[in-house]
Length: 96
Image (cartoon, rainbow, N blue to C red; front, side, top):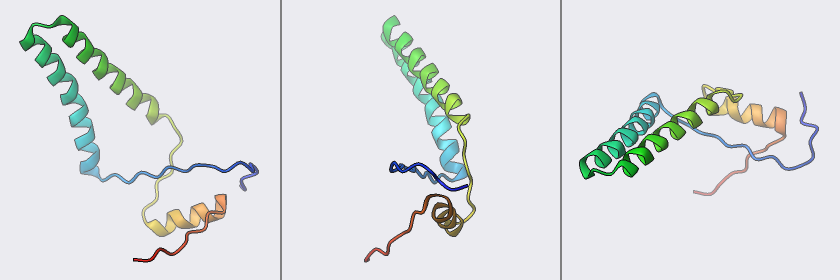
């Protein structure tokens, strides 16, 4: 499967460990709970609703993002080979 498109493409790569993923999910949950809790303590119904909406918008975005096509690589060389084979991406050496 060769890429027939002549437009430059942007490829975003994200590396996340298991514990990093757990931390993201826990912090998302805590953000909503703490914002709603701060609204309850301050007696502000508006802050409670904003916290509720922030929480559900974030959860909805995470759920919708799960449906996208993803490819998992077990090592960096697999990723480099895939990018070269399908997209013609060639890495360059960097000076350290």
